[in-house]
Length: 462
Image (cartoon, rainbow, N blue to C red; front, side, top):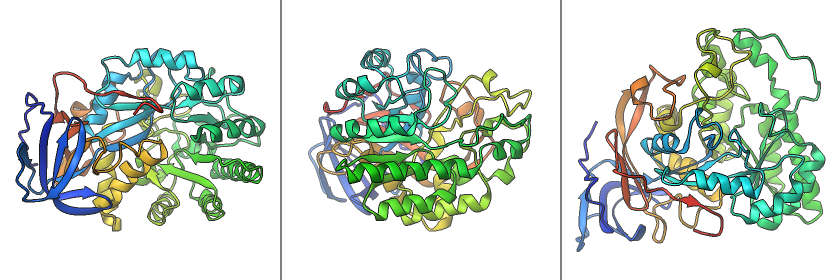
């Protein structure tokens, strides 16, 4: 692995970074990127001489800081599960310079303006990267939704099935239809956890058997939920409502045709998937390994390859982490009890390496990954005026990446609160060398700046 030897103590307001491989505006080029007062002020030819400190990165890739629009931080209220300090440190170690926090599993859930303000108070002096916030829609808060959106959340999320959190109950079709015009007025997306249990069968007995768990959350739950969302988006469009509907953590490849058809009809209908659905197959998961449990579940190898094809075709427009941690006790690691273990994958800082390890085998370039993991999530979250690309006028958010390095993920290197992840022991390709947030070096070679530099990203205030 190359060493950059950047200086944490030299926090400059005017400097430049030079690399033979800079990803900017959908291409890779040799360039010198000039920064002043937190923003990119010019992109010069590689050999440009400037009247400021200029660091030569050689062949290390200078790419936009990643944007992760699906992270559960759980603070306030369940900070023992994670917390802004540890989550954003893990993000910085993974080259992520902006993330968007989910409205659950914190207490209170972010479904009111008061709860949102409480969350903003909780982030003070804890953000190592910039952080936006999703609100939530539940059946009881539709009357307060306009006020929540005006307060500055970037959009809202709902569950179409039990979330596992009593304070965040699922919505019905009529709730969704009532929410769409309010969201359209604010021009923000509606994020849906798309699983729909129309059979209401008694819970399956799972124990420690992964295939039993997989069968307990079948593909048709996702397929039917996506189909319903397409129908509701069509109905809204017929009424002149231009709603933005987004399917989070798509797992079932059988739902892809519905999504592609909605997009072909001109609906603003998007979908994301996550590293665990693109790097792990159900056939590889041993029984009793609760660290692999998530909802919707990791599915079969053939399904995984279909998801990759949808990423290549653009039906799935972005890759985000769905980092969903909890305490080791709630994971029931020792007993291997999949049935009662909390569902969620912890791997926030390793996403770029995990995806690069698989993507390069399928013909993807780092330019493609920059689009999928920085530009597209920034556009989706309404952050593209300042995030997601190396371009003049945008924040100087950089990930410096050695794409030729490889390393084995170990417990000791994990930065999120609980040192558990299904990827421990796995060797991956590509390593984040350093991360800049608005021109400030915050991470380098397993070390951090003396203090956090991240800021909240409030809609209308960046």
